[in-house]
Amino acid sequence: MKAEISSRLAIIDSEIAEKEEYKKEHKLRQEAEGELTIVKTITIDSSPEMREAKTQIKNLQNSLERFKKENNECYNRIAALTETLESKDYFKDPDYKFLVNENHRLEQQYLEVMADNKKLARQVEDKMDKLRKSGL
Image 1 (tube, helix red, strand yellow):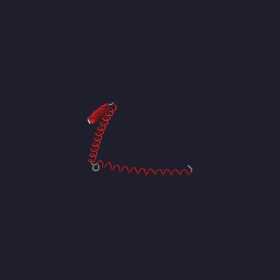
Image 2 (image 1 turned 60 degrees about the vertical axis):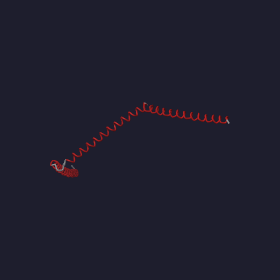
Image 3 (image 1 turned 45 degrees about the vertical axis):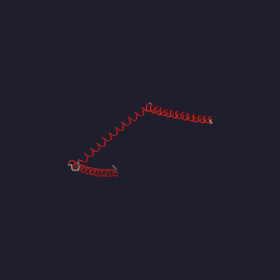
Image 4 (image 1 turned 90 degrees about the horizontal axis):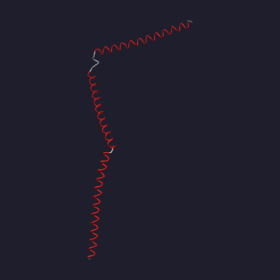
């Protein structure tokens, strides 16, 4: 019976030793994975490619902010000019009315001159045809 107890104790001792060894290996694996994560983070963040990408991102963000600001200024300028334009009533201004009337008068005069020009061209053409027929 002593031999049986001894053998069982040996088996239990070996199982305990295996569990302790497993725990040590598990702990070492977790520590190694943690260190690997830290190393990867440090390496990735400090790599030349990552620094260049971060610089490029900053430059693009600055450009975007500048373009947004310029765009906003343009919208504000357009709004101000639109307001100024709408505040002036050109149709009530006597100078504007005079210019509109003068434009209509000149347009009518132009149309009359063009019509007279066509009539004169026909008359000249008719006279030339008569002279050709008469033999001159």
